[in-house]
Amino acid sequence: MSKENLMNTYSRFNLILDNGYRSNVKDINGKEYLDFVSGIAVNCLGHANLKILETINKQASKLMHVSNLFWTEPMIKLAGKLAEYSDLDQTFFCNSGTEANEVALKLARKYGKLSGGQNKTEIIYANNSFHGRTMGALSLTGQAKYKEAFSPLVPSTIAVDFNDTKSLENAFNENTCAIFLEPIQGEGGIVTIDKNFLETARDLCNKYDALLVFDEVQTGIGRLGTLFAYQSFGIIPDIITMAKGLGGGFPIGACLASKKAAKAFEPGDHGNTFGGNPLACSISLTILDEIIRANLLDNVNTMGAYLKERLYALKNKYPLIKAVKGMGLLLGLELAISPKEFQDACFNNHLLLVAAGNNTIRILPPLNVNKSEIDEMLLALEKSIKECYLT
Ligand SMILES: Cc1ncc(COP(=O)(O)O)c(C=O)c1O
Image (cartoon, rainbow, N blue to C red):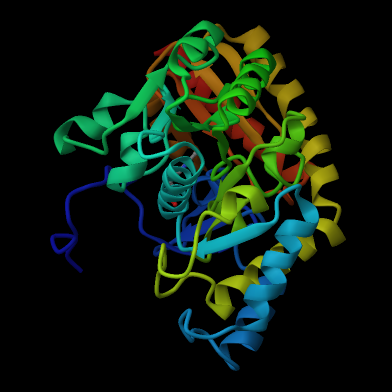
């Protein structure tokens, strides 16, 4: 088995995974690991969830894919549920987070031109943000390391400092058509948006008839303890982009918009082959049902609070931990050492965690995690802290 045929774009763990159950995974040699990465905030019901397996079996034996030339019931039902559970109205389905942001970007540009003329095309984004790897989403990503090699990118994008209200006020004008914001900057190091900054963004969008786009790709679908991330902040955006947890491990992306914004699109404006396929949509419907049926939002809140409290206790004990960050089950530890070094120490103790930014390690269990799984994780975490602390 040679790895030489894969393009050299990732620094992967030295681990070939084979199977998993809930928050446990095993490699091809049968070695077990506790998985608190969850496919980077994706596997919200853990691995090998029975409800998802039943849905895959049932739907795949009927229809997996038909293209967007046709309607299917799962697509219609899922768009209905997303509208019912949120304050927004209409969805465009795609396959990933970056694609969802491309949809939002195109919708914002068209909305701007229709409402304010040919020059209303400027899009604001935040420094330190992450919105994906395609050229449009990359243009709105405020981290030079991801974009430099690929310039020139999409024009008329303007960076502001995250949580800096003044910078926001200076950037908005009558040519602004949208601002893209993450409620919590995930890849950027688990940095939560300030209430005042968000309220100012909403007010400025209202003032200049620009769209407030919430990138909920990492924060959405229950991870913060509310089904949609915006519901944790009390400000309603005009557009929400989603992916990751929406499919629980099966690829799906979605751009959900208010009717006012969505009506800028007409047939032919955007499209894709796989988006909204009946298999992906059926799985998403199962995930939403399960989050509600099993009270997983309550679980995120109680387990998140328990985990956070225990992390604060570790912080008080070990100077290696400089801060505990995040909300719900999107948590991070700011470290005094490189997160990669700490990630490796955890890996040696059979705990999988993933770095965020240049000083933070992320803790992303599935939404159905229980206390004994958290306790097991904390043991491996403390062992790793001690090892790093002593060396
Ligand atoms: C906030 C945010 N937006 C967009 C993306 C890109 O999503 P994808 O990797 O599915 O394209 C990510 C991925 O980590 C993300 O965290």
